[in-house]
Image 1 (cartoon, one colour):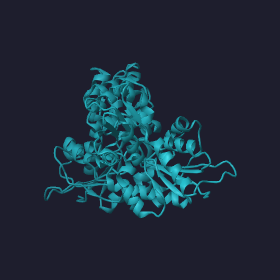
Image 2 (image 1 turned 60 degrees about the horizontal axis):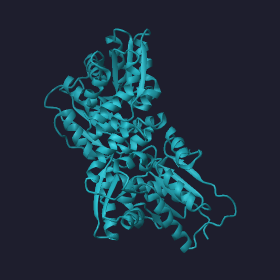
Image 3 (image 1 turned 60 degrees about the vertical axis):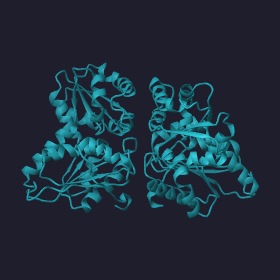
Image 4 (image 1 turned 45 degrees about the horizontal axis):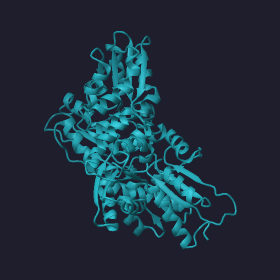
Amino acid sequence: MDNRPIGIFDSGVGGLTVTSRVIKELPNEAIVYFGDTARVPYGSKSKETITKFAKQDIRFLLSRNVKAVVIACNTVSSNSLEELKSTFNIPIFGVVEPGAAQAAEITVNKNIGVIATEATIRSGAYEKEILKNDSNVNVYSKACPLFVPLAEEGWVNEEVTLLTANKYISDLTAKDIDTIVMGCTHYPLLKECIKKAVGPNVALVDPAYETALVLKEYLLKNNMARLKEKEPEHEFYVSDQTEMFGRICRQALGRNFASRVINIEEF
Amino acid sequence: MDNRPIGIFDSGVGGLTVTSRVIKELPNEAIVYFGDTARVPYGSKSKETITKFAKQDIRFLLSRNVKAVVIACNTVSSNSLEELKSTFNIPIFGVVEPGAAQAAEITVNKNIGVIATEATIRSGAYEKEILKNDSNVNVYSKACPLFVPLAEEGWVNEEVTLLTANKYISDLTAKDIDTIVMGCTHYPLLKECIKKAVGPNVALVDPAYETALVLKEYLLKNNMARLKEKEPEHEFYVSDQTEMFGRICRQALGRNFASRVINIEEF
């Protein structure tokens, strides 16, 4: 039994969709969330900068006495997981391994598409992890840099978004994929357009769900679950106070939470 | 005569379009450019964070011994100019005042549109400055958050971009504007689509050009121009090394320049 909270961080507010999954699977656990809204996005930046920012994010979560860290951000999970694991002496969970395992499991024709930020695609992490699970799979990847700003603009079901999705995804559908990994926390918000672009016979994988299951299994196996003496109290922190947090919070968690601003550059 | 360089900074690489104008108008001057590519964009962030980042940017330029600072970024110019001027004892030039003056001068029917980032529109700075020049003008403003990612994706003349421009700008054309201010350094890269969206009878104002003229006048009047003993050497700094710098550099300046990475959080 370990009553300390679970730390979750993301480059911004997209990680709230992962937080929602974790709360659903582990309703007794207290969450400390950090969103780096002052420096968002990470997905267009270099591996060095992504890793440096992620280390500050984890040092902040450690200052809040967390027992484990979930990297909600695909960009960090794919570029920095190994270095973060070797730097910090705490269980750290990324979203890439669980998402890759799920995609490899459900594909029938062995053609998998991956859509994500530029930095995630550049890292090759999804491809590597999928091939670890099944070396007979073909992986086709496509960076979709406009999806995050489209989701943040709230254009989740517009003609512009569908046209953009078609433009990005036509390369993948041409390869006869039967499974596609939404390798960025914002992408499930555009699910309707992505579904239309890939067609009715392609399965959508959201790594957030699988990650929550992996975390749950780990906590139970290691006797680290929280004892429910009272309702858990979640804490939300950001590096910049913007309207976006409240909007995505309501969308992902069904209600607003107050967020406190911290100076992440001090960590 | 003052042979020190001119400092120019921006949230990222968009300010290279302003740099190009300054080099054209002031070919004897040496430039020190800083682009905050690790924390880009500023346009979706709060006034407090924008001002904090801008102070670090200027402290870095001062460490390079500049004689004057040009804020290429509309978001900083519109949110932080007064505070920066009162913080630093050096001539500081924003892009909003020159752009607003030009728009007020050329409008005939007194209806002006302004397109910019969310933070620039929220500040109301363009409206305030235009009304200072001519209190009889009507100013209609529209935030266009997708324009920067579209320009950075290189989709400068695509159907998606034209559709997006029409969606953003139809509110303004409905007001019978005859002049539109491109209040973000990235927007001139999308000029073709913006022109189509506003129609042939609306004049486009690019504040970068007017800003270069204001700077030139100031340097000459105050005897601060550089004496051309030899060709000026420009220096380019970024906070993250990304491919974008080289691409926009070639587009805006006609050739690539080497850029050095600095840790802006130390300033």
